[in-house]
Image 1 (spheres, rainbow, N blue to C red):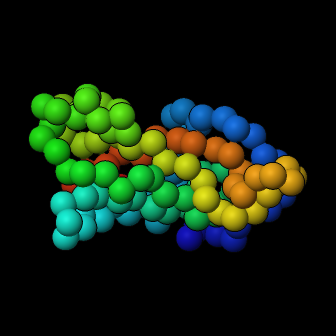
Image 2 (image 1 turned 120 degrees about the horizontal axis):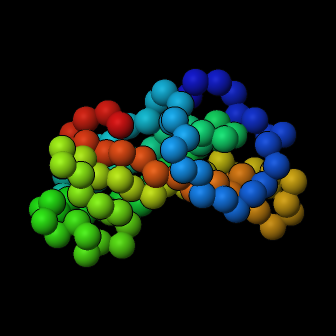
Length: 110
């Protein structure tokens, strides 16, 4: 992770758009034919991850609910969420509440 977690960031159930990701995001191709992403949350720097998704042909990506769209370079955009384990000022929360897009190039760093 690029820095320490920031528990002082207040909880907000917001979708971050166009926010650069901190260094440390990776995509991994699993032996079972899925891909997963993880790295630091761009808001609180805690642990965040995207769902483990099947690797599918680019032509079928639009049918997958978590794979937002196929891009011309065949990278994917995956919705990821903070999962830092801290309440961030909201007693019933277990993260800072942020979700954001992660660009994934298969078998490469994000």
